[in-house]
Image (cartoon, rainbow, N blue to C red; front, side):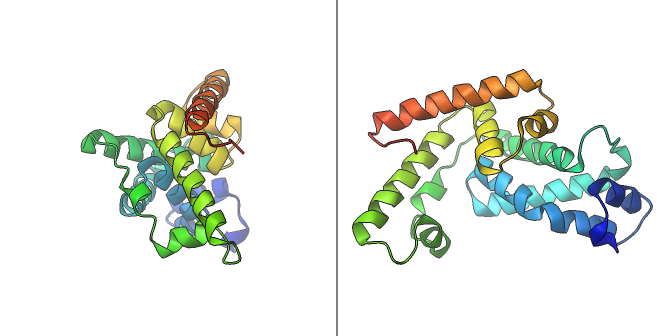
Length: 192
């Protein structure tokens, strides 16, 4: 049964044209890849397209996967490249997602139903400030923050995915968190 195999075993099966193997890889990683793309692009439609393009590119390049890194790191690297390509092509950093705070998905994400209106408003304000601060970071710092803090990847996984030395990843995260703290302190919001 393919669901019991490791990612690396699934890649080998997919290369040998097992029709279910790559589908299992997609099933395992589609939510995390979408979340990474969404964190980098800030637009659901763009993130869906980038995630889909990630898996298409991975499928086309299965035979080139050498197994030097984990499949998850390889997929994250492809996703980062897809997002960077889209950002370069668009040449604009869209923050329209921040303005779409009326969507049902975000209301559910913001706070449970049992909160008071004032707490909901405060939490929404804090959430918007954090998103704006993250979005204002340079792309190289933003990527590391999203992967570490939102995707909960390890430093080594980020290093592999971005093809950077471990020390660079740690340095970028430190710099990004320091900049975020300063930006949020300027808006008089506590960093939690």
